[in-house]
Image (cartoon, rainbow, N blue to C red):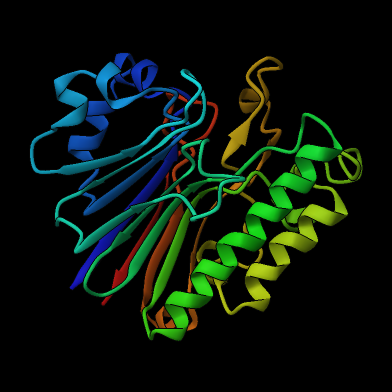
Length: 256
């Protein structure tokens, strides 16, 4: 079976709804759609967002309203659904949904942004480390793992338009890049870069400076898969033609 997975930081699911999110979802032909930065509790959402035709939904919301949050739409109901990382340091922020499907475990994550200061960079790196511990538990149990979402880090110079100017900017600091490198050391594969090692495409643009129009972006959003899924990657794309957020959707097709 071919599974089409899509991920999108929507920068507010209610705002995205007004910009045509539900039409986009219906046309996506996706088996699973993971959204991040929903900025809403489920009881703040329309019935159409909570029950779109053909999908079941799960949500994780931050304790603070209007902040963070993730949601996962799927055509097939997961065998089990989990929220958080079983760690009090992180689980009040509504950043994690884990869906256990038959062929793989999908982690939909809105990773922290380190832009508010050094302590937030350390928080982000600790979050990375904790997730990798959870992923290792699944791998030890023989379960294939897919992790997707907004990682809030560009890994290599090819992944942002102005690497030299941003070497000390959160999102491209050496410590953050090293933290993201631990995902690869753990056996996870960046699916887009696996298929397109030299392609320059971005997934996020600063809206204030109209960076998208000028082609000045960052690749912050990823689909990563464990080693046992690497040979099952059929397609991985960045849909930078899709408007509606400061991020664009990304997709992955797995033959499993």
